[in-house]
View 1 (tube, one colour):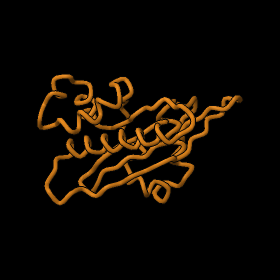
View 2 (cartoon, helix red, strand yellow):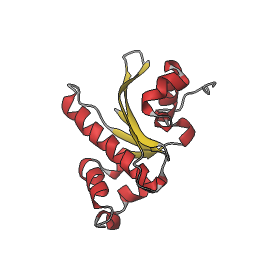
View 3 (cartoon, one colour):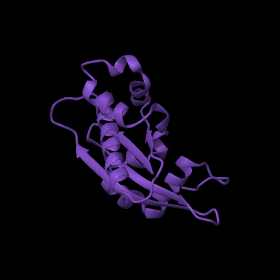
Length: 157
């Protein structure tokens, strides 16, 4: 299971994909869950919104982990290196100002479950609820396949 998170001044969200390889080696990806939230009216920095998106991804990951019959490995992807630093930094975990966010991510995940993805390849870069309408279903699936395992031949856009 692969969970992608992202944020912008307009909102933040996540989308979760299952990635299955069959016996023939064919890769099949499908959108399992997505969630988008509008940015609060109170002024919040982009890094804080990125952290909020990461928390949403972790919470959805926990829900899917409890609800799915199969036992999947969960991987979390973000295009924010600030988020990756917060999650991997033990000193920040003790900070009272970031406590709710870092506790939520560090309690449920390990730092090696978190990966960097470039913004152009992040399916959550577009509002998760609009992934299909913006790119079309096949384009989003190509992005997910390429983001997780680079293809031998480049994907044409």
